[in-house]
Image: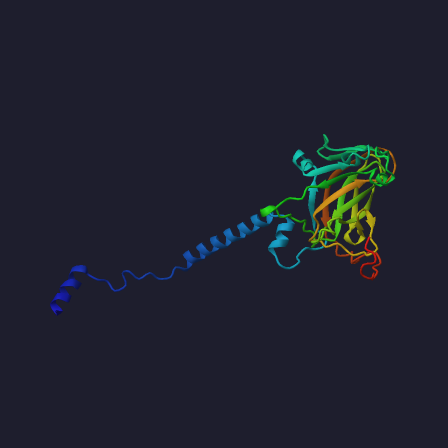
Length: 277
């Protein structure tokens, strides 16, 4: 047996440390440095491709800083215009107002038309539904026809770049709740325009929006929830018959840490089944 082992060792000429590999630190450092560089590059690309809304969903805690801004809607191309619906009182065969939303040569949206206070129906009650024109954003749908709400919970101000004709418009947030009776719940705030050839930047804090039901200011007021905004709209219903024109570049949201007001209006405790309209 010993002779056999000696022959095997003599034939193969075994070397004790021939197949042993020592740790190469230089090689490991190069590989690890390259891996860290690629991870950093992927992270930078992820932040670059994602909007602030996507990053807010990615991180569980609030991370926005003072002055952070993001676009909600732009009006720079034809596809942006197609994401909005135009409605008037004439669409219900009651009034005679006309409106349109078109793309201008400067790549902005032009909301224009004619506001009429006249109505076709002889009933006096029908007159309250006349004299308005409106544009509203289309609510996108998720799987199984679920509505995708606008998430603006991390912000506290709206920022609009507009050029108007001097009229007063209304910025409307459709904020329905889970019940059918609350489907018409909205929050509004006036949108004042100066007129003239110059652009104006309008800043509207969330705390300034008041609650509206069926077109009437509710007795019970509360601040709207930033996670429950279904759509956004702009309405002209100031009662002045004649042509109107509102040019819109974009609608965005802003984080202003210096604005600490939660709600600008008084809240009343109203008994149940008394009044909420």
